[in-house]
Amino acid sequence: MSPADIVQKLWNYCNVLRDDGMSYGDYVEQLTYLLFLKMADERNRPPYNQPSPIPQKYNWQSLLKKDGDELFEHYRNTLRNLGKEKGLLGLIFMKSQNKFQDPAKLRRLIVDLIDNENWSVMSADVKGDAYEGLLEKNAQDTKSGAGQYFTPRPLIRAMVDVIDPKPNETICDPACGTGGFILAAHDYIVNQNKNMTKTVKRDLKEKTFKGWELVQSTARLCAMNLMLHGIGSDKNLPILVSDSLAADPGVRFNVVLTNPPFGKKSSTTIVNGKGQISKEKDIIEREDFWSTTSNKQLNFVQHVKTLLKQNGRAGIVVPDNVLFEGGAGENIRRKLLNECEVHTLLRLPTGLFYAQGVKANVLFFDRKPASIFFGSKIKALRIPKTCPILVFLLRK
Image (cartoon, rainbow, N blue to C red; front, top):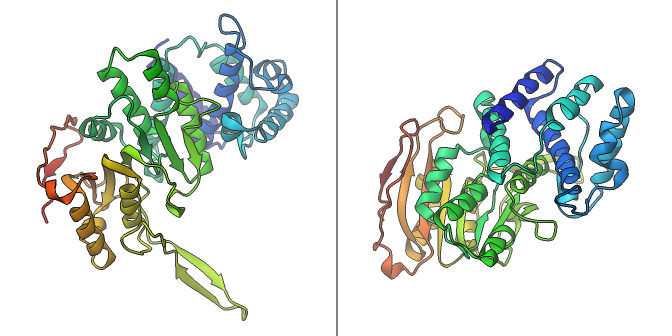
């Protein structure tokens, strides 16, 4: 069965579950749990014979043996107990809950859809593409909120093409969502370097990528997505569930690719001793930042600058206010132009991120001395006609 056929089969079943009250996001999340259990079971058998990280009483076979209310209760206990484990297992199952309403529908998903496929014999591309296909269908089908974690894949591929990542370079996404930039950068390196040694391939899998994601449920989807593509391991988790803006992580990368969340300036509600309520802007104060501001997008621009090694390359999606805001925004733009080579700006079509009226851009810059700032080169972008983009130089 082709990836497209698998996606369509799983998508059709999602339509059945919608009638039962399950949202699309919940459906993909439940798939994440069940696919992980199924693949752990496959790898525990010949020809792999790998030790399973899943305790026997909560493994895939234990689910297959149960039905009805007994299956429901066992599935609930499985999710709760696996969420207490460490490593990739704990990350995927942390705070997990059974969202099914009908035991018969859960049984059908387990037996008729997932168990019928041997996911381990599929190539990483096949099973990863199937999973990515479901995420993309969600973004197309549910515009409300979809852009919070899903960046259109043609745009991701174009940004990766401009950055041109190489083997042995370290690559970071400080707002990684479901891992789109990490996956695209991985595929680009593999496709452009057919003769990599085993050591380089192992490093690409275990040491190249690092992502941060604030939302636990989205990080769970990312972890599963990366696992299906063969990225990361139990000993080398490629993503962290935390607020990447909270502090300088202390590590630097050759490449940063990211689409940080758009949104209004956040605020914190404060109740004083007299019971009076006031709101205070959530201002990020860091010694490595050029300006102190509550503007999330401006803070991400500064954060990306910090994350880059000398001569490192960055591509970041930003809203128009980053380009034209005064005050802190003006100071940050001036500093960025002075300390980095800001060589390309992409103006994106309005509404690309499923929000009417939101104008977005992609800013590309390298962390290089200001003396060579205008020695830039603009690479051609291979963008489908359905995703027109205007490219021009950003001048002082």
